Length: 203
Image (cartoon, rainbow, N blue to C red; front, side, top):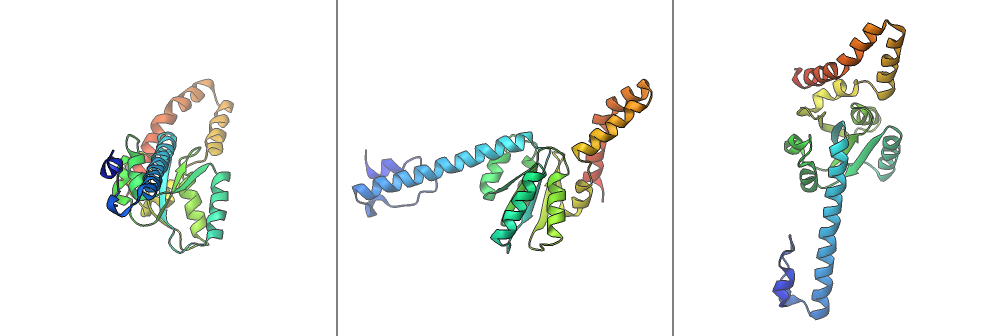
């Protein structure tokens, strides 16, 4: 195998093999291969999360301190939000085949991604509340799987009920006649869909 052949199939590899000795060439091939494997693992992980998430919010974090990011991650775990700082090129690949493919036009700049795993408004609420005390966190786009939304829809998405609030409302119907309970249960999916559509279409 020639030096050039050893680099065939390795993306983003612009290294001229003539500058490497045998040992150096082997190390460089290993480094590039490991880098590719790490990127593939990240894409796979984020794709799996996105496939299960109820919504996603993205925000620029330019200027945030490490300590602030640590606090944000802690709050995210408490609120059922998966946070990830990932290159936008990898995020675009991770969104392929998910309900968030239409987020691509908004993936610009240094972004942190927040995926709501338990309640559709969780990531929007997390970013909205955190940004009140940290102006360096600026939401740029959101999606509930029903189309790309701008930052102007942050309040609307953040106001979507939590899981506990939805359950409390559902349990309250147990006190109502059986017919009303059945009607309420049957209407939940369609009502929720209409709410998401209204948020997206609101001007």
